[in-house]
Image 1 (cartoon, rainbow, N blue to C red):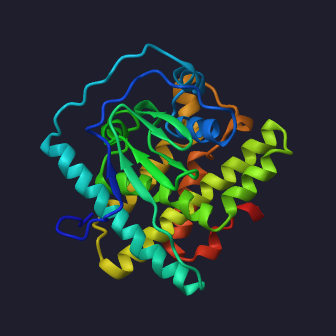
Image 2 (image 1 turned 60 degrees about the vertical axis):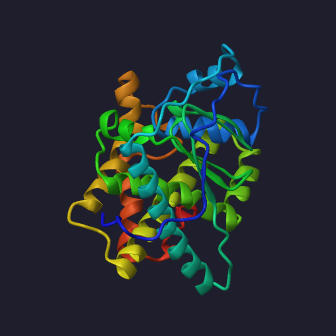
Image 3 (image 1 turned 120 degrees about the vertical axis):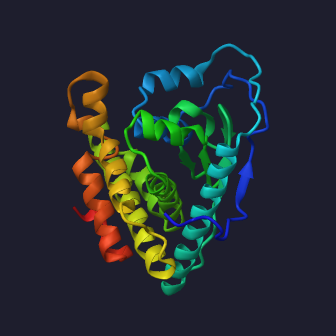
Length: 281
């Protein structure tokens, strides 16, 4: 991805220099816990581990190491991708007679406090609708390459665009409707609704890639393959197979590898927001 020397977003909130205490203060049930747990499941972290972390632990300050050149470059890359999402979504919202409200992106190390509760690095990136912020520990990019076998800068860009997709869902009122509907559903049916929401965010990330390429010509050979590989590597079926050796489709919350690839491709090939209606299926 051609990203160096391009505009960086001003909506970066850098908390990496802030030490955190490891003990959670207890996130109440509801959307806060749901968002954090779904963020964990997104990248294959056992929700039981996450809930344990949220429920308590030793109270010790965490020191923050000095930022390396690699970390600085990753922060700049993240700011460029966020700027690209701002440009695309401002245009698409304007075409619909709407006003796009830009999210903040918080860089953190080890742990962070959000309006949705406490987040840990092991959970991976997540979006909190309570404060309209995206949270990323840059060490995740290393995990994406090593743990999920999804290297490449466009794989990283896909993940950022996916989280921005959740912000778009919040602005369009989709997220609120999903949360309301889940209250009346069984766990299995609620999971199916979560899958639809996540696949739509994948489609939105594809829409972003389409319009960014058309307006800025930043995609290099192999970039889309990197995004498709990342989408495939973090499908529920693949993650479940890796973690426990078998698959339970009724517990999927983000979609299978094939579904995630399909919906990113649909958004990328069409660039049409209206073709990302996963809820009609």
